[in-house]
Image 1 (cartoon, rainbow, N blue to C red):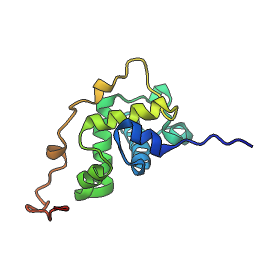
Image 2: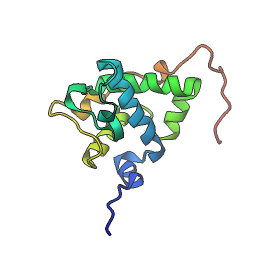
Image 3: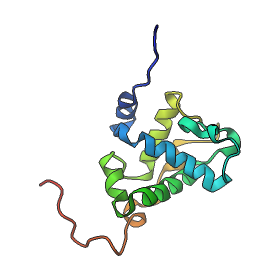
Image 4: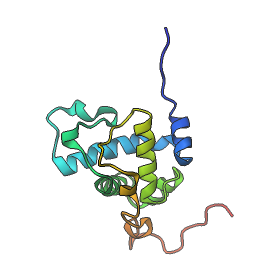
Length: 142
């Protein structure tokens, strides 16, 4: 019996050296964004594994905003640190990951979607800044 397995490590490495640990976050963030844009789906299974039918499509900018909100909801003040740990430093990184997952057959896009839709949607330092964040965080390494 031959089993076809998807090597997330290889997909994420080829996309730009991202950690495959971010996959559940990206998948859940896509579902969060589709729900934010289109409301709760009638059929919960439509976004399992990150596959969204065309009627629930979101564009790159919407997805970047949804992933930002999802990161803040899930990780609070640590959101930027968690994303950075996975190798995600700017919105284009989200696009690189999404298009690598599309190439691997794990997600779909429309003909109108482009990697450029993810460029400079917002600045991580501005969007993840908080007045409650420490002024002098402890240095990481030396």
